[in-house]
Length: 405
Image 1: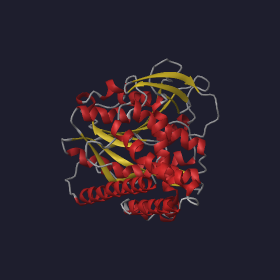
Image 2: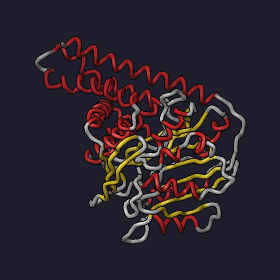
Image 3: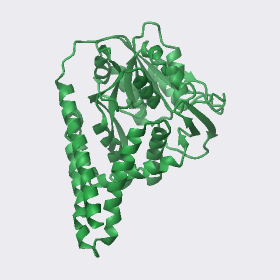
Image 4: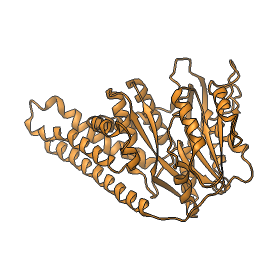
């Protein structure tokens, strides 16, 4: 039994290293690849919910993209019965007022109007309906991420290749405080970039992606979104059905600063992500968490109480330190500009010691997702009925930190 536990823990650690190695090879190929300039007119759609100083900074950052072509930004938030609009609306209007290529839209409230889809999906549909005819590419960005000045160029350029249906950037959580919950959450999120590439299992992330406008009709994306909870996983499935590649751009990474995250917040967020993945039929991603993360986590944390009584289990204790080393190796594949940001390397070093916790959390999420279909997102409760259908259960009456993720 002891031998089985040790072999299992180390086997799945080796699998993890192989995944990271493949990620390095892909990123090197993609960074060395030279493509001609491609500068179609782009619409950047940025859905908003809530407001704080960082959100304002992120919104203003979209106004100064170093993109050689034309682009227009469509900020979109939603109506509210009590105040008429989300708190972000007047702030967005103030930012947009001096800029003719910046627009602010107000989407109907899905609860008040019984629309049967998530508020984010409704916001995106509202913006797409308002796009000018000459828009060739549609890009999406979440309000809680910081983008570099070349974000739009990096995301759009690969779309000149007909077989690429959509491009997707990476998501990097940068904890501003070193509490264990925040560090474990950053591991959970950041490690996912290792699974991305241009292979059939690459997934769209709604916080940073783009596709040619023709894909709306070719892949019937809007039909999939119509009654859905989430747009990005449905875009992933739409591209797969249409035999179009989802292409990961390794240098196009958006940064989310997190601080003082509680375990309740982290578990709610990670459970929500995996619940959506499972009930939308993305089985390989869910099985990876179940069959790789869960056994390894159980071997490591399950062995701890017995280490003083069963010395033969001592080799398992090295796994958390190897996981820390693995995360540090993974971080070497991040864009150079990100690695050079103040305190990023230091934070990666500290976060690495929570790697085993973050990976075990992914295994826990996979089990929980089997038994739960309901999620809370943006202050609204939903039940996921299928990949393309949801039931809106109503507004959650509680205090929430302003968040868009």
